[in-house]
Image (cartoon, rainbow, N blue to C red; front, side, top):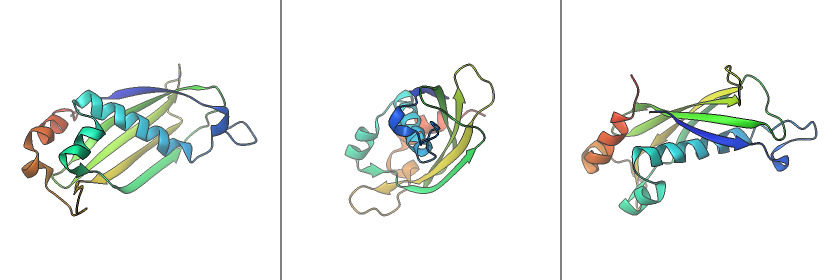
Length: 139
């Protein structure tokens, strides 16, 4: 399953040259990841209420082009890998109407207990949620 989120580059997200600052891309990843989790069938808030958090372990962000003020962007997100202890999301950002991504990347997150921040096995603690996420992975 792939989620596509629309972003319009705001003036505050650009630098003096009118180009979106590099620090915005991970924020846009978060928008797309949040929408993807909703499509899978749960919100981040619901996961946290269940006692699960997903702290960021690793971020990779490759810039292949630029986004400018008022560009309409499409941010694609999907689950690339899932283990009982971690989940990896993959992202591509396209300028609307273009076929080549201006940005690609991934984020890797751990599954941890919301109270202790100790790693948990999602497969054991929340097998139904784990199965939903696993089912969303495109092969």
